[in-house]
Amino acid sequence: MSLVPTIDAAGCAAHGDCVDIAPTVFSLEGDVATVIGTGPDDLVMAAAEACPSVAIVVTDSDSGQQVYP
Image (cartoon, rainbow, N blue to C red; front, side, top):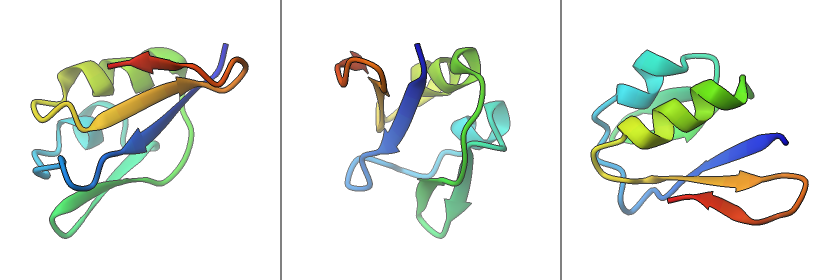
């Protein structure tokens, strides 16, 4: 399985927890986080689960199904 994160820009409050957990995957660009790369599935999921705004949507690239939230 390979997890692909996307950011719900309308829901992102730029807390930065995702960047702290997975800096090769996420970056803060002004008032919103952006996906800048890929990373291990465990870090992608940890960042999504740590987001206080629940603004990170994680999809399984193999099945196309949303796995979080």
